[in-house]
Image (cartoon, rainbow, N blue to C red; front, side, top):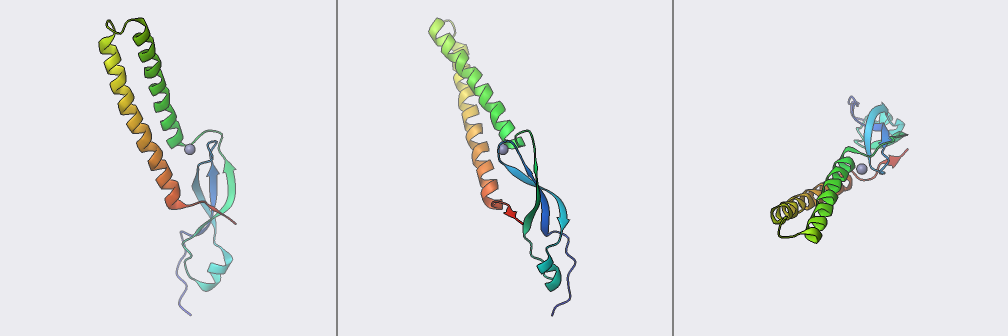
Length: 126
Ligand SMILES: [Zn+2]
């Protein structure tokens, strides 16, 4: 039997669940009993309790802000193109450029979000 190591980062944690269904770990709550006996660190995080959060997570909020900006440029673009494409040529070009940049950023944020939740995996229920 090995000497029990101090356990500081394992077992049961609060789980904050956002409106978008994404989540993050909260405060450490307690060790799991099995691991307490063996003195091994399980290194596993399990859900102590799920705390609902009314708003969406930071990542989703960021993505939504960019989507709204994208939508605004798209609306402007259609309006200018319908009204007078020649007169609004430069505005149209600028809107198209902005949309391209925003579309790239949205794509990047979405894959970042996906990669993060894939890496962590779904929280285990205690
Ligand atoms: Zn989210």
